[in-house]
Length: 398
Image 1 (cartoon, helix red, strand yellow):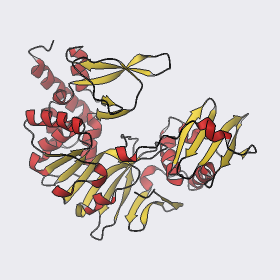
Image 2 (spheres, helix red, strand yellow):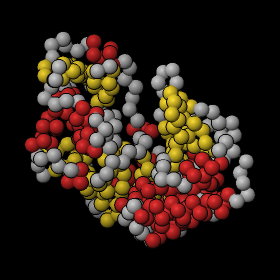
Image 3 (cartoon, rainbow, N blue to C red):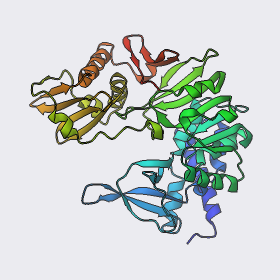
Image 4 (cartoon, one colour):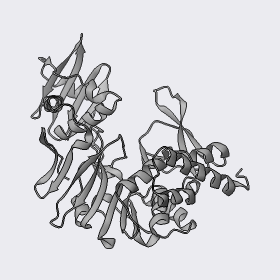
């Protein structure tokens, strides 16, 4: 049962959220703080999933549905916490009137944590008077913040999932926001409303989509997250030049977004089948795979660099062995621990682990440079990640 004082509770919690974000340095701009204090996030998340402290018989995480009817206090508190709220798994839209516990699955839509939302808008240097394209409407909460800050007339937001957009549109219009909304694939931007001063993507791409460059005015900026099939991530802020090229620095901090649906990795089958076809003779690896699998900031950064070196590779751990599989070329590699070393076996036209080893060695020789010291250059001949002390790394063709 939703109590009568819902809006009073929500106003109090919104102000507390804005204060907390300001206190930790996530919300420095007064305009964005006013937006956080004004936009009712709970209206955009009538239901969401929170992880439970249990797993099923297969070890899959249990996700508990939370709505105002099932647990009003938990629902409203979570809505105004600095937390990403998952609203959809595997593209399946839940029935929030009769929600059920879900086990496992891949999140395909969410309401991003508020601190990241406002940081994205701030990092893109969005100013009053700018026209903006948001890729990935999701629940509509981020769109509402932009409308509150800039005015609805300057905001366009696109979403690939029609049902998601329908839900977001309803919430936005009910709150009085009237941005331009459309069902569209973010890889292609949105030509009817171009050109834009800023494009901000709430999903990740394997490489910068060329259509986005063509839809930004000269001097305009694109903020997006680069990712790939090794699940390495890096954010980049590109400035678009008048000749169709763009360049910009990678931004610091660990951030991950769901992949644009057309950039998700292909299914590769059973890694054991791939390993069975590898040569029996192996060699000692120069680096431990833990350098890119560990739960550390450096490993997160290295995974992105490794991904640039082997862009079509995917990785899975089975038992103690780490498998790399490339469905594009039919290449594979398996790393197996042996005492204090790792044995590697590779097969196919691309030596996947050898490529990654070269990047790791070059990174060490360069003094382990931080993410912000890398730049991305986009031009007619391709897209390259560059560093003064390292060889160029090419992103996959978009």
